[in-house]
Length: 634
Image 1 (cartoon, rainbow, N blue to C red):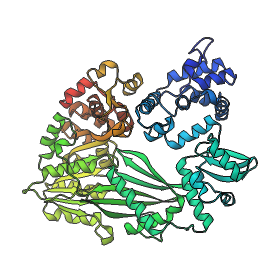
Image 2 (cartoon, helix red, strand yellow):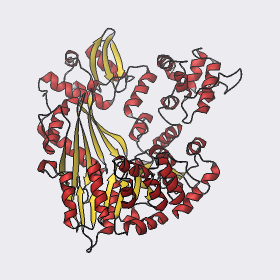
Image 3 (cartoon, rainbow, N blue to C red):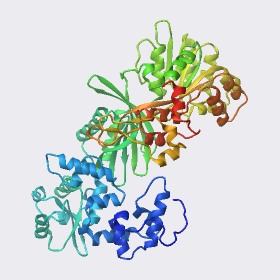
Image 4 (cartoon, rainbow, N blue to C red):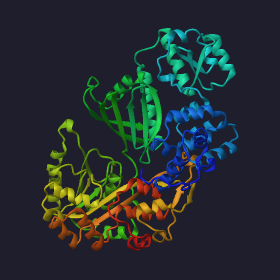
């Protein structure tokens, strides 16, 4: 938070409730904060690049505490609506609240505001219930992961819990703590008093948490609770998780043991989203099932492991790479999903700008030899791009041999090798034999070390075309990393044809996207003025059922293509620093940086400026949109 001077009298925004919110207004009336403190917080708010609610700024400045805020909300709960409370506390945007009201009004089935907010992903259900508990004045409970008092639970017959959405948790000094879905429901309160006595301490909980707790506690009381979920149930859960992931076009599945539960998350469009929570009782059985499927050691729980699962779904074979990682609460498992029969992209469809693509095809893909490197972090689409190059080069007159870990796309007509260390089919062993296969094109899945880098360079020196990937931040980083591997500068300069760096950015949902002018703070972060983005049509998704109210649907690639021309080769031979190499590339080779290509695509509505700022490195001040369009030929 930026430091600004204390305001003088009458400076800053006047502290009236219309401008600062109802909670802050009440805090002011009760003299928990002063006029001067609120004015100061308002001035700080205007200085922030990412605005925070006034109440958060007051907390950061130590003018007010969470306990005072909660106490204020509870004492004035009747005058405060849950929607405005969520907005003022910063858990919900005002635009999202208005959208929820509109959905509520248009719905044929009458629903409460909370149901609409949770169903349409405006807010996490757990967070909503926590705020609702403060507003209603009841404690929040999570009975699913609580130690339920079995004696209290046994006071009611089993069928009683089918009729009443509540569960007793424990005996407290002031009475029995009972979790309700709606603590204000008089019928439920009366039922609880008849069974557990007049001294009831109501708490608020999620409906599914109560139902799950009742189901689990019934097993304990009847003596039929098993220490481990049976095998058939675990098999069904694992298959359901994988099938749902494939159906939703998920790239990764995260199975994460936590202190009180097992959390499952999916990576969709590059972002992790919550899928489901399970009781922690299932962790041991589910982990063992997955280890059996990927042929890992079931007895080993102290070391990290890996494996692979081939999963058949309809006519598609899914290759799942499994990583098992030992954590404090158990073994975390991550699946990477690879559709082995996925359709290949044509090279012209990967998303390069028209002029740069034509230049890349003529100067790089069509040249007889040289190393082509595609760089980027994990999950940036490197493999898809490499395979589009292979698809372009694949013809009856060309011999293509690959060394991959694993083979992700099966292509007819090329020799693909999938690394398998268990059979002593290692990366090093494969690379030693690959050039003896009389290839025209050599594909090395990834440059991992100096040995694989030397193989790539030597293959290019002997007249082969080499395609490979690298993990670096940008295209210049690919060159620098080769030099840091002690590959001689003259070898790098003479063999590398091009380095392509890329990222995947989310697309605004086509069903709900609208044109939106960039904010002043966004332009400032890019170093732009309004004139620099003249003619651009930036879009943003408002959120709809089609995109699950995220505002995004699908992803698009952005590229940075480094062409090794004469001046750049000279800079490499002289071991120039990375920023010097980048400057030479921009001035002499027409380099368009990742950030600039992202801005170009955002200007066409292919992605959003928010995605550009979230995902792309700022290594060089971007040029105006009009100049970038001229360079890219768009």
